[in-house]
Image (cartoon, rainbow, N blue to C red; front, side, top):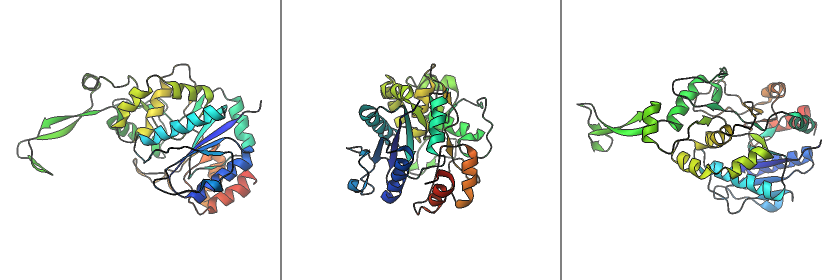
Amino acid sequence: MKIKIGFAILSYNEPGQLLRLVKTLNAMFSEPPIVCHHNFSQCSLDEALFPPNVRFVHPHIETGWGHIATPLAALKAFRMLREHDQPDWFVLLSGSDYPVKPASEIAAELSNTEYDAFLDNREILYRAIPLGQTATDGGFGRAGWVALAYDRYCACYCWAPRPAGKLLSLSGWFPFQKRHVRHPSLVRWLQFNRPARIYGGAFWFQANRKSIDRLLDDPRMPQLVRYFRGRQIPEEALFHTSLCNQPDLRISNDHKRYEDWRGAGIEAHPKWLEVSDVPRMRASGAHYARKFRPDGVVQEIVDQTVLGI
């Protein structure tokens, strides 16, 4: 069965790199539906340079890493894709992503999968590592990320008296200080709107129409947006908490993305990919990889040795 794959791309700079990505997707997937949410407030872009199958979201949202606006921009792109094109699968990409697997292999895998979504995720638990949390190469696979995520998405803060002799704050003499509240029973008592089970992981994912329908039509989404709006890096938990709390969705923890976190700290970004990384990208089985520099050097090698275009 031939499936229809649609792409939602978030970008905020490097229009030339975005155009190259779009042209590659067109060559691979025969001009698939593409919706781009570009942050025009950070970088101008000439829409006339882009192929006619590319739509841009207007008005755009002023996105930024670590801000609720980023997942909200993705939702706008998903909604436009669904309304105009109704693809079978939706792929969320950034402008610095690039495919690293031939289209025929991607389509075959999505056509025959038992999963509804490929979303890197794990439940954010108090002083516990979820089953299957075995990755040691950095990023979201590190066990230490769960503790970090607990403070980001589950813990809350309260004002507590400063210890005697430590009343000096940055603003002068002040008798109270902010303290983390982490114990689940106290957190539930202090936060009435907290989701029962919170999940987190990498933001970039792909999902079928059933999953995207659930995401766009989730009646809890306004409440989840309110909850995560004041949290650090909400894009790494909002979609996960919505989708992973749907018991009938089959979600693979493999998000089909190649990233290299080796040597990076927990809060760092994956490294820029080099030509030497191309064999590992292909061997990983990932559909897409990130992050690529805008000069196109590595993408050119991927075109020649992996994609055949």
